Image (cartoon, rainbow, N blue to C red; front, side, top):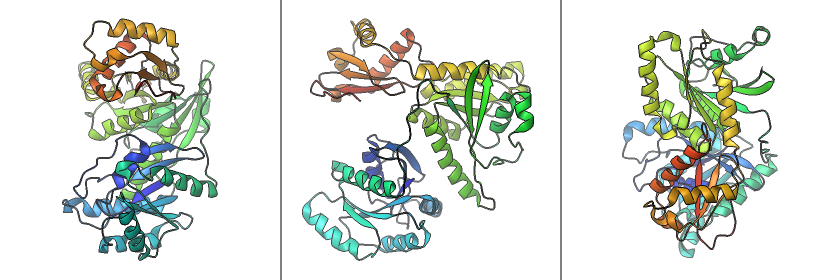
Length: 447
């Protein structure tokens, strides 16, 4: 895990977005815009790692009520990271907050974790030279590097530096999973929604007697991430039960932080995500956030409404509609109303997992895509999409389709959404997100 640390408005989120090559973190001139941890997986040439953007430390924001909480979360990131990017505003003198963060880093960071000073906003040589002299006053950092993330200057150097340090600590590439391999299913959700009960219910009687999952009404009972292989009609499935902490005695904030990081890692390692929801309660903002993490990671997704035994027949239909409406942004995900306690409709989960896994690895020939595109866009007011000369599918899941158009800048999100809806009508992609990449006529390489 690589954590970006610094006081507010030092360019942390701009650097994060530049490295992820997609806009996830909110970027603003207002100090303190980023309050919570935002993470994304980076697949490098030699190492894969989880990049964590944090809220600003040391005060200086316009929202004083959240400063202590943001500071505490950032401190947890420092204590957990394998490498730290300490950002300093290259156009400003060192502040009291910068010095306080340097003091915290000396005491709190893991001894094996390198600290890299990243001097941001260095968009010309003079700013760069002054920033290097200023940063030297801190007397901290294994290396120092200058960047202008807004202009994508120096970002690739940061990535090379990170990989070099991680390789020296024996981190490496994560093996790509074969489409024919046993699917890994991450069982995620808020505490006490019945994740462990679900896995117990899916086990055979013999397996349940020999290695049951610990179940309790106390949220956070599960403290390890554990793999459980379950066989069903000749097929194998590896279920990963996400959890909190191995050690006891931690504060609630620490449990929440580590549970979040482990959930992210479980999602990244999974082929299919089963989001367990409490059917007896309305969908929450946190539920939708977790679903968004799965969608962003490009994983197969199934919404499992547990505890249906607590609902009347009339309430079940109403709750199903309520959850479908709440998760419109991932309407491709099938919804299963069931009960881990009574096992009602629970066996259907295996068919849904197999379908989502199969569709996530589905390949369409270029000929099929060309025919489909011609039939879908003909006579429609689709602007730049009508200039498409070629369409093909990328090699990695989830299904990713590459359009070669005259000017990619003019392609609208609404037009790509239309194509997603049309392609789902013709080809089976239930349970998996779909990606679109637009390229100009001069782009020769395919992602």
